Image (cartoon, rainbow, N blue to C red; front, side, top):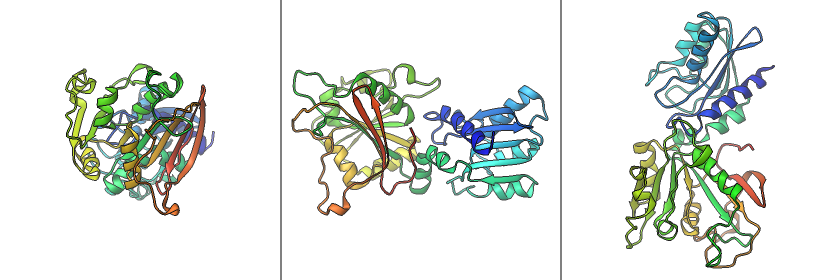
Amino acid sequence: MNDSEYMRRALHLAEFGVGLTSPNPPVGAVIVKDGEEVGVGWHRAAGQPHAEVEALKDAVSRHGMDAARGATVYVTLEPCCTQGRTGPCTTALVQAGVKRIVIGASDPNPAHGGKAAGILTESGIEVVEGIEEAGCEELIRAFAKVQRTGLPWVIIKSALSLDGRITRMKGEGQWLSGPGSRAEVQELRGEVDAILSSGQTVRADNPRFTLRGEDEKEGQIQPWRVILTSSKLELPRGAEIFTDAYADRTLVYKGQRIECILRELVSDYGVVSLLVEAGGRLVGRLLDEGWADEVVFYLAPLLTGGLVPASGGEGVADFKKRVRLDHLRFKRIENDVRLRAVLAGTSGELEG
């Protein structure tokens, strides 16, 4: 196996931490010695050992104290070099006697981003950077945005008909998309720290916005349920989000600016990524004001008519200023077609 293949192995390990590590990013590490994989690890939760330390511990448990001496370590994110809730990974790697470090992405955290290579090189360790960089950066796109802007990565999810509507005629049931698409939405919820919706959606649909079924990972905390409302109408106190076992994970914001809400979610609640499940009016506002980073649309083979569009808002007067999508990925799910893409101007390519 070459460097790229081992880094892809580390990326696969890192994905086990998606949805578990906030406000930290998911990271994976692989230790290779004499052509043999001797240790692996991934970051499991904030406050717990980082991926490199997990891999070193795994190597020692399998092959003894000197297992990593002279080895190559593959890590998806630049090792940290400062003392936080855990010690610096650069120190742990030097003490373990590793010979070579292969890094996927640079750390966007300005506290130690770009510093690891110098520290490791001064200790006699060969450093190789930028291996499978695009995939490694995509994995940490939400963390990188928080570091750059103090705002979370915002994903808009919607199921819509061929004529761009999100509701069916009365008496036909609430679902547009099929069971396969709805099951995948549970996977999406498992990727994020919060779900954002509107008071109107709560009143109309009484949603739960919870992780359910096989996609809930061990140790995973239910996402925050964040409800925005500007209406004079009170939210129903008997709604699921106020009465279920996760009622303490519900936050209500009334008449506040979206930017202030998003920044508070990052600073006070550790939210790095956020999924929007709401009607066309809130979706349109988020798009109009430029808060969204990514969209996931489930297109159902239906023509429904009706007044509720998937995206409302004011739109743009100048055609050149319309919302554009990059890195489009299409997937057939039973009779539906899923589109996942990032908005033009945001960073992070998508895979799958």
